[in-house]
Length: 95
Image (tube, rainbow, N blue to C red; front, side):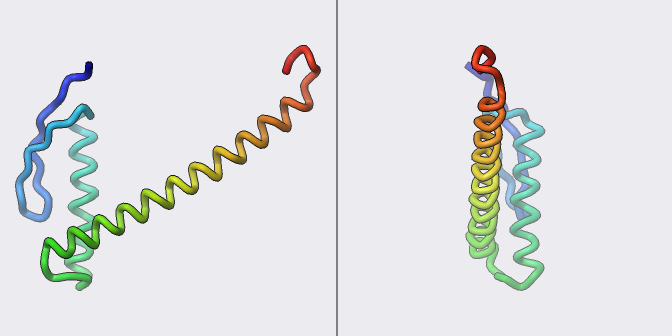
């Protein structure tokens, strides 16, 4: 079982203490990304209320996640096809 770490974070001026199985550096990096995303929405005029900006930020981050997953799946499919092609080129004893 992995050890949970507690990390104090600040996101859009609010302090949070997060317990996570991930290393503290990872948790901080995630929080910084969330903070930057929400602040960009606030600074860009997408929303003036931090809670609305947080929702818009969550939508933006989820969009990024879905796009990365699709890219990953496309890459994995191409890799499977290439692997099958290479396997066909190998002599039967090496397949």
